[in-house]
Length: 280
Image (cartoon, rainbow, N blue to C red; front, top):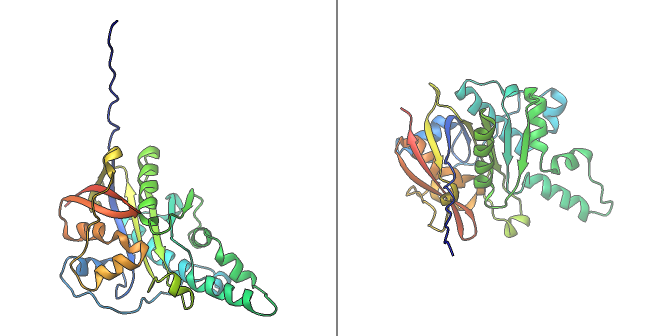
């Protein structure tokens, strides 16, 4: 009998470049402000998130826009502007753990009322792809748009999806991850304290605007190692309490221009690991 053995080659690593960042959250009005806080150049401020008006929308849609729409437009436009790209040509991946918390609250209030009437505006803002739809209206984008949810692991799931699309299709992809807070009594069951969003332009090729190179090594990108934490007493509670803020260790690596391994919270008992290196 002749013994034979076979070995499967390890899958090629997935490599993308971060060409633009959009950021909005508590005490953070934009990426430059967040970059300075994450790099220890400015103190983090425990202030309520301020959402800008969605000026890119037509007046009728602007009046109907909820928190997730305002947040997604702000971070997405910030990331694309930094990358020097037009939204109409860039595929997008939207990721959120629960959509618009206030809208969900108001719908529950309506359903608990005697007439149980839900306005059409509340209803269409309740669907998980609402922000993606408004993004298309605001930017005129006809590029593909994926919308996903993985509860508290939504940022990592969105990152995996966006990286895979960028590598396979060979084009830049815009990732938008965002969460909003819930009023009581929902907050007791889902204690998300504030609104937070991050957008990343991920490109398969390095450009003059590239900030960092991200590498995911096949099956090794999923690990049981503990997630990276932040030493900042203001930013670390955000990372722990807002699902989209699980992105903060990755953003810290970009902000500090340090090379190394970053481990992000993903699913229960499973984290996402990637290597990051500065492009400066």
